[in-house]
Length: 567
Image 1: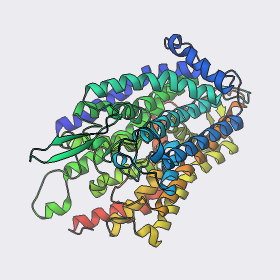
Image 2 (image 1 turned 90 degrees about the horizontal axis):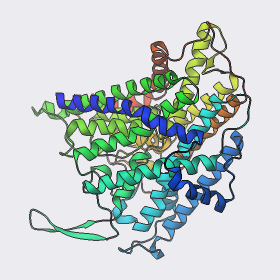
Image 3 (image 1 turned 180 degrees about the horizontal axis):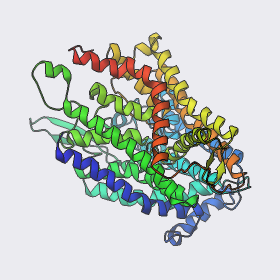
Image 4 (image 1 turned 30 degrees about the vertical axis):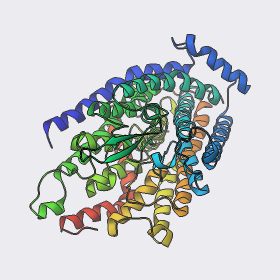
């Protein structure tokens, strides 16, 4: 570990916190439906969409209506992508004449990008045409991110409104988020990436001469436009198989740093937006404090383990950090920080190969995802997932003081607690259930590259990533089979919508309640004690649920490595 490495982590943490307020103000203006400077240019476009779709943006929806409209939209997007990939061979903008995707593969990709998971079993530059990349994937990057933020807005309204059934309008929320937030930032972001050396072209390939004098064919395409929203929307699906380790996606250390900031920017801003929505900014800052403490602990642990290096090599007298699977232009600190950021934020982009991390270094991204992707988390999904844990924490605090639990002016009763538990229980049921299935069936055991605990970690990571809607992988797993394509698709769907529906139901229940002013007996939910309780609840639930599986995987792998055994 070095001083520049720690400085990088600390500066990144400070800038993320500094971005929370300005991004939160932007989000809050969209949340309220207020006019912004962009409305003069994009207002007619917004109204045109409503006219074409027959949508009245002022028509309010109950939580059930909001959920039904959202789910129908997601199903149609998945079907559209499935059809596009199945017809890829006869579609335009396919200069390399790539074949259609198999039915199970197309189904997996459709669900993957619809759910904001962006799990990729394929080599992007060798399998997908330019049209498939742009129309099949990039559109999802915008709309899946907008859906997550829209659901977060609906949940915010559940906490902030009183004695009403209305949570807003899904179509209006989704349209405004895309037009006034995601699109303008992505355009500026893409121009920055192009200026930094990221390709943006319809050209197919280019031939290059290596230092050895050999000829190498490099695939080109509209990379910068996909890269911008991939990071900003915490999507993570790369144009290239190597993802953000590829120099065409992530050419410099500066671009690497900006990409990490963009992954966290909206998620951090949503904490401020929540505080503003409920009329108490300290609520938002308390949530952000808990998130950033968990993030810093994970990033530090990963950096420590990667800087310590491989215990097997230590037995051979070789010292130094673990650079296997990492890019020299990023180094250990830049790679370890990216590992923590991308798995805290449900992004799934990688600038280093996670399968090459040390055993305990690889435990960090696993545990980040198993917490439910609520440490900043995906855009929208992180904050509403975190609020589910906040409800459980305030319920426990209420039991301690002998009063009905209250949070931001709403009584938390049996219905809300049951729904929160139901949503959180989806994670272990899907992750552990599918992992157990794959660990005993021949079709599942055929996937891991490695044997022993590391092979188990590859399986566990895949279903953790899918259920948490992250999309990164221990790439040693050969997942492009009907078994993995099918089971991972189910895990992605469960992890996304079996958390969204209870969250919206909770919002509907809270919106119907009266405001309950805080009293001397209320448990304070803005101070150090509250932040500590939140972190404790999150770690205890995650630790008790997933520690046995982690013991069979990365922990056993580490103990074996310290004795010189590899798999």
